Length: 257
Image 1 (spheres, one colour):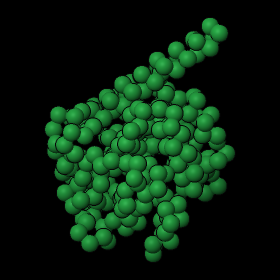
Image 2: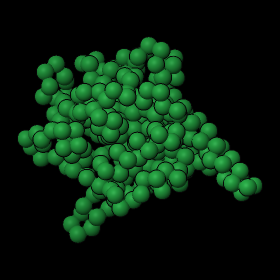
Image 3: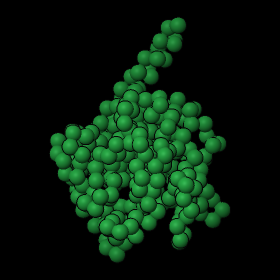
Image 4: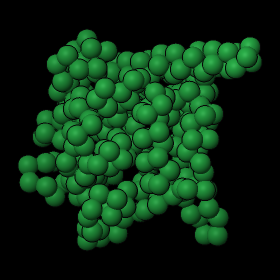
């Protein structure tokens, strides 16, 4: 079975430090992408990104409560307190650039799309809901949890783009739950979907040799039931399986030599 590296977040609980991800991410990789999830701890430069990439057939950059440290895109922190995860920042940027360079399938989800944008030179809105003309994309914590994560955000998919092609439509409704968002888009990225307020909700890497897509919503929620989520994870899974076959062939060639 192909292996997909799934990024973790650092959670500090008193004296204990945990590297975690939501079960939904692992289940989506197993069930929808048809691959084995391998959790990658947020250990920063203590992990060699090339060694990580050598071991996997794909990378999934997950969501999380932390925000990218703004010095990575040339800004000072906005007023207020944010959860930071500097180890994840460092490792994720290296994995983004390395995966694209090496043709390893890459899927960025929520924080993951933001990591892709910053890794290639873009910037973020630190308080998207305070930007004139943008609505509040954060999860409504005053309603029942299941209702708060239900699809309710209408997207316009780029005509002829990857997502529109996979879905066979140019509109979709998703569960986009985020406090930050893309401001200046990195030059190497192309827009794949926009929210009704103009917020960039999905991107792809221009001229990438293999699957390299980021989405701002949570494709792992109801991955097999939601048409667009399933289409994205199907395409990611297909790319991961292609990579695994190529990697297996390379190993066999080396053994024959």
